[in-house]
Amino acid sequence: MAVAAHLRKLGVEDGLGDARLLLEEATQLSRSDIIAEPDRLLTDEQALALERLTDRRAAREPVSHILGRKGFWTLEFETCADVLTPRPETEHVVEAALKLIAPEASARILDLGVGSGAILLSVLSERPNAWGVGLDRSVAAARVAQRNAERLGLSGRASIMVGDWDAALTGPFDLIMSNPPYIRSSIIDHLEPEVRAEPRLALDGGADGLCAYRRIVESCARLLAPGGGLALEAGFDQASEVLTLLSETGLYSEFETIFDLAGHARIVSARRV
Image (cartoon, rainbow, N blue to C red; front, side):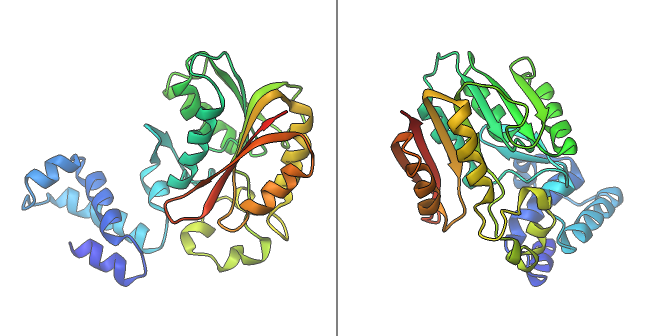
């Protein structure tokens, strides 16, 4: 596909995958339709739409921003420049969270830094008796999460709030989850353009990348119920440091680390004693 070759030449790693998504959007055809009729000619309108979408991707705008949506877990979420794009490795947070609460439990869940709502709403979709609070410092992000909750029919069990981490919360919660900002401030401007296009508030973890974790550990001492679970995403080289922060409190047991497909220790989970 010419679009894929063009994108690869410009440094887009998954040029073929992105080209397929852009073609589906431009033609409003499903992937199975395109595969079934690969020699289908585009209309002038479709060709123009594909050209415009390709130009945006060539400028290294993330596909999730171009399409305005992203699949995550078993759901589809509205995405835009106001929220961090849900990534495959973050699905492991959902996996860890589901291990920490029983299927029929009336669990109280907190998602710190809710963003698009991907983690919280995915967990709620799997736990019909649970309810949750999603907190974010960004008003714009909270609005996106609220729209996703409403579109997915989960707004009755999801309360989206704006606040600085735990400032407005009292708890206790049976499960606390977070994919916090964990990139070191000094390297953000050197990352791929697609990453830099994400909200900096969702990326910047401070000088050592651990500022948010320190806040979360402090918050959980107050907000997490005895026996409650904690599931945190970490940077590819940060899991051991996050584990140390948790273990030093003496408040946790049943530590577990989940590895992503690249073999990095990505998720840290534990249970409050």
